[in-house]
Length: 313
Image (cartoon, rainbow, N blue to C red; front, side, top):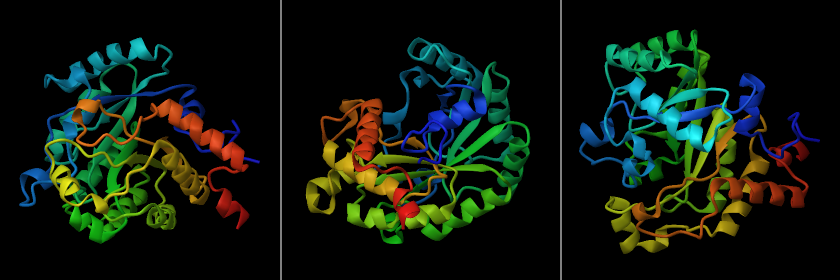
């Protein structure tokens, strides 16, 4: 019934890793000291929701060199996940193509010298991929696994303007097309629950995601962090925000998955940060693995799977 050999009801990242690497591949976050052009060189002060420190592991508190960070990350994650088939260096903090190519080369090549690093996952913005950077990424892609994680966030220009994102939907499609032309794997990062975006609208957006042809996708529910512009907006206009309950989010995710291409590999369904960073507590949030079980249970109850609505239409 399912288009995947393991008969899970969605195209899981764990399945992808088993198929390509024989087992689990752990991402090791790296803070390479890059900045974000939306925070530094533009007048809007950055995205209204941004609190990058909330997603930084404790072992990155000191700005060591890339190789040393990765070795610390290996030690940290080996205690939690001792059965790994290797690691990806995950350049996560801020915009990891926001530097001259010679700087990028020094950082990325350093990561590839570390034992058991199988490749790179590089997080960036769609408006921060100039041609000289794309040329270097193309070279990298010929030598190692490379996935470019692109902050899409929303498929609506009104929303992108509202949250001071600093790029357009058209820019997003252009970035993905340039990466596709170079056969570089892509991952789309999306946020559900941004101001004035309702679940019904997000479900309509699945067709846009399918057209984007991203190999991977990461879903995050909106989290409102302390000391951000969005915290102020939420306090003044809470009616602009849709807050999911845990059960509502499971139902929404299943509705979304049914409409989504079965070829897209799902990396995450939700975000998790320490509660001390949150200005608004959302739900008694299930840990990600528990949320995944709930999603699969609901899909089983429905007799459905990722792409089921496409398949049956």
